[in-house]
Image 1 (cartoon, rainbow, N blue to C red):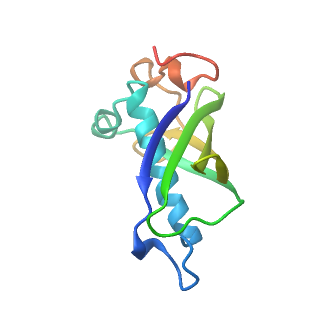
Image 2: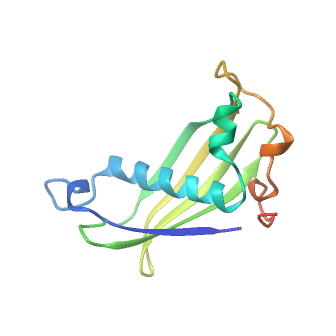
Length: 135
């Protein structure tokens, strides 16, 4: 399942060259991952209330082209790997047909102590598994 969401680049996200600052792409990717989780029925606020968390363990980003103020961006997110306590979500940021960013984000499910934990059934959504529908 591929989740798509969009946003418009704001002027304050750009650096002195007029490009989106590289650190702001992390915010874009975070926003899109949350939208992905909502789209597959993952109740993030309930998970937090239950004492669990999803940590980002690794981010790989290939910057291909810059975005500038007022660009309309499309962000695609989809799972490419899933284990008992962790997985990888692939993401792309596009402007029209141009791929601006390719990313892979490794996540880990953790308990209230921040230690890796197996996903309980209520958060082990089919949509986290590569090639599976949202459920």
